[in-house]
Length: 290
Figure 1 (cartoon, rainbow, N blue to C red):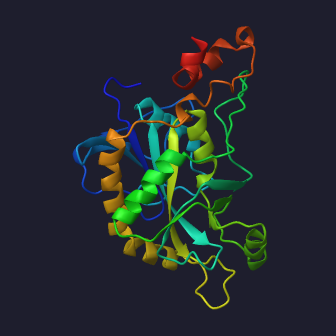
Figure 2: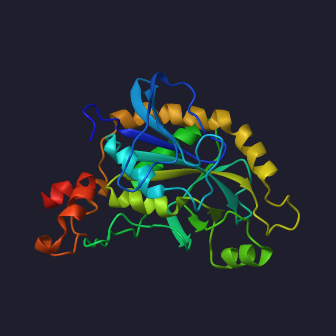
Figure 3: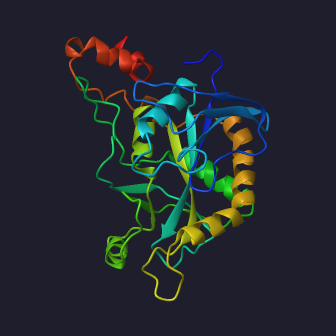
């Protein structure tokens, strides 16, 4: 971990590839045991606090949701000392009361992906981390508060289904997700949230509703054009909320249990864990295995 840790991390999704307002900026290219992150990480000062910004899809949006190296992204932020991650994501609404232009801070995930590396563990070290409540409730509340303070309409709670992508849903799929009780739909929150929990980092999502997916009979169906149009309209809101969060999070104490998520999760007998595995995961598991 770096000598002067950066405690706050921002992961920007579709439409957010840079963080305005940063001063004392440096660009850090980080190599991890899991490969390279999506992009060099931008470190700067925002409202007096040092923050790390990472473009999830890379600048220019060149990485598809399935191709994102989520493990490298989370590990790289962890190596900088990041303890709290605020993820910015575009999402589709699966419910009438969640219209485009508004923000959802979800409290649940339904992982419907199929092709992704979903854990740091394996290769001789097994951990069963608890994710009954996959988002940090303390951080989620602070994110919702910041959106409200910035003048946005925010919905607290809801289930975020993550699909593989990169294609959008069929109508049959969209209606099925609604029947399952899902609230919003996107392509990137899983496994990002689960990896953050394994790394004992607080994680919350500011989900920008851009469309009604394809289930709504009288509204515009989801399209890249619709997504970008709504995200551009919400740019100022997002930037103001993140600016407010930077100062709040710097002063806020971590009163949640995220920083001890692995305390009872490591099940492998210590003397049979391969040394290579211990070395690879030392950043995450060192305090339990050293």
